[in-house]
Length: 308
Image 1 (tube, rainbow, N blue to C red):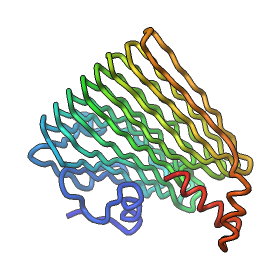
Image 2: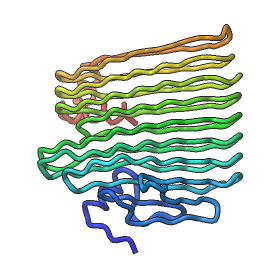
Image 3: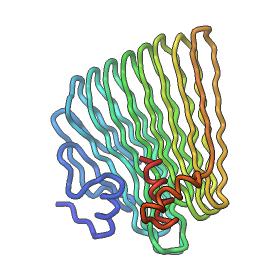
């Protein structure tokens, strides 16, 4: 029986939408160790031999199943590095839910660095959801540095939702992918920073196979004195298509740097980048205020709609 306190339960709701122990395969990690784990007939979760993470094996043809691997931290001063390797069998179709929540009420920094490697088999499909959240009244920082690697076989599909909306002081997110023939990668990043927070997102996608494609889109809001950097590079090594987009709202004294990168090494590589950074339009705020909202409420409505 898994025993969690109210803070841990709240963090799980925030990062994994979990209100109870999930059905199917799962591993819940808290303050540096596993507090609950379960496998299924088709999905096996086992600890790595070095104790620093998990190996998750999904049998070929597995359909309509999910894997939950959330992490919560409620103690100040913890720093950990975890490696999770996913082997997704051919023609499988599964949902993988990760994410990390840190509640730091102490004076020391708390940090979780997670490296997730996905080996997506031929014709397999995955939907991956990763949410990050921070809370707590302590002076110690809440630091999250996720690293994601995606290796996609022929005709595979990966959809990745990366979300960080509140409370993370520093994050350095790196994502790299290698796509073979006919593979398709879709990434949707949603990010908001405030206070003195810093967030760096780096994507490097190698489009190696004929007919493969990638669509990487980031939407972000930088408030107060926070800083963001979005660095996305698509490398077309075959007859392929790629699109990357950064759409950002800047507020207060926030700073945003968008770095587009397109490298075509094949005459039939079709690559596109779009970037837009701007403030909230005054007429949008005025329109909402005529409906009875305060200026602050109007801003929040616009931001919430933008980040959906």
